[in-house]
Length: 526
Image 1 (tube, rainbow, N blue to C red):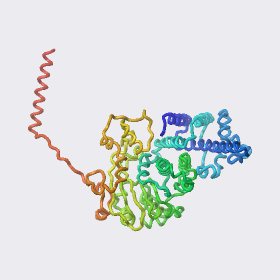
Image 2: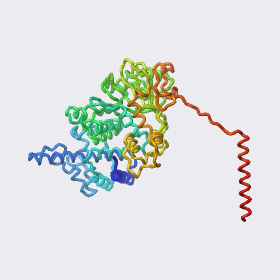
Image 3: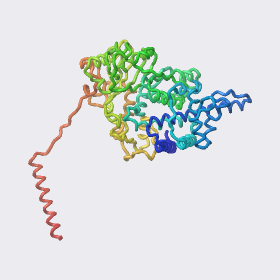
Image 4: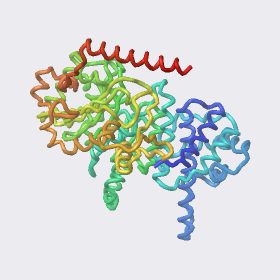
């Protein structure tokens, strides 16, 4: 859980960058990521040195030669600003700086080191570098949870970059999807548009929190750190940020692929994964000649949101399952491509659920309505009925501010905080009095979604007027595979009775008499 102290430390660092002339949130995060990495490799080297000393053996230097000791965090952090800055900007006799040395790290330093090509040092002054180094040095980064919380809060700052198209899937929506899918011990989990690796990190956290006993077995530990998590991302900056996010959350060697997931270069990603969680790009359009041909065989389209569904079907093993965020247009679009894709999900695969989300979920970046598609790859059908849920609230206000609506009630508050996957300091909560469970539900549907999803056998008897219900495959097929919840939900209109005009006129006349009487009494007092 993010603490007020940790938040304060990150905010101070952020403000230092801002006042120092570095205002782009992604640039700030990337530069901070480099410094965190430099500190980590020094700590890794120091730990190995301590082990060697305790065992009375000579330590084989892994990351720093004898001539490179001044590149270590523990060495330069105490130097004066100009000397420190020179170590970052003026090459030594071998043509290296602290930054260039960092870029030459091999895989022993973690997945992050693999994606350093093209990294650029962009801290403009010695004063700013010194300020940031001193503040980063004060942060306690020994505990995995603390390191993970630090980076999660840092990544939340990307919110200010939404106008540039860089924004994250809300963490509580990610956690909702992960909790629904319940990652299993043998799962191989992939996000084909991984960005900052939020889905992969949340999946790892789910395993840590719910299956701590799995880590007692060496085969699982090996699987967890090396094969369990795969991310595909073509943006080099996001690859580096995602790699650091995963490593700080305790995943030592995630599989990160620097490719365009929809291109021919990614054609080897076939029948590999048992679980895919994703929020693919919306509203994009590609030329046919840059799209991998097998995707077009599923649905011939230029729309990225449809192509990514085709890609996910190709990447899944038979029996693999997926939870994917899509714009509402995917559910009811009238083009042949839209219809064919929906028909494929219903007839050839097993479409499990559609959760319709309110349009404010992605504010302030976009007001588009979205939904979560949950399906299983079978290649032989299996859809008997589809579970629909009409999410109307997610625990936050649906305006641009997205204020957390937590409840001053311990039981309900804990339930909501767990569902949101958030650690919000007490002083940030927005209390609105003691509320009943019904009132809590009106502010946040996520606990109800989890409960109903895990007890789907009880959902068949629900009426179409309720917030969730089942729809038979036959009915969906009759509706041309329209998957919009509004196609199937029934609305009950309550009759409103109004007074007759004559009665309303009498009420007005009575009020007028009363007003005149009071006015007359007031005049008499004067």
